[in-house]
Image 1 (cartoon, rainbow, N blue to C red):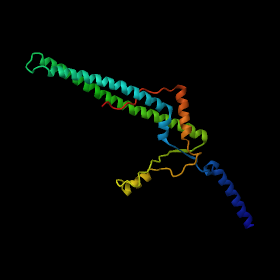
Image 2 (image 1 turned 180 degrees about the vertical axis):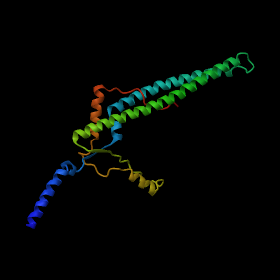
Image 3 (image 1 turned 120 degrees about the horizontal axis):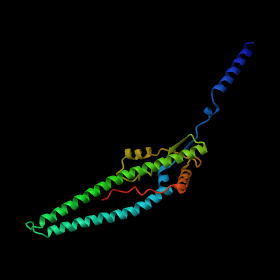
Length: 210
């Protein structure tokens, strides 16, 4: 009788356990990885942004050269006059005004371009984040980690200390990735599809003017 009671209790407990613990909670989480560096480098929008960047840098450099040439010409005009000449003061004022305007333009341009560069990076990252979520949900992944495996410094390099070499090892945050777990290519494909459907490369992301 005792054994029958024990068996009955065990059966009831087993049934309650099966009801209280969802089946999906017993399944291991599906994890994927992606290389954000490769995504940024290979997605079509960043390629177009790079092309736009090169074109705009040339235009901006032409404008910068012209402004510097104009300022230099006004300075030369002033320098060719004697300090006690009646027109020296007027020529000096023109040079000072042009030089101040050039420096102000240069500084404002630098600040604005830096701001736009950071904004563009933020926009691209948000697109990568959204595309990663799309791919993860479609494939049933519970989490996606960034894969960062940098090249090791040369062992023969005497400038690298053992501590620095160890630090470079610790930057490798993924030890093994199976081909099915790396969704970098799928994310790039989603980004390019969305970009082709309606996205256009912004005309920003420019370096500071030097």
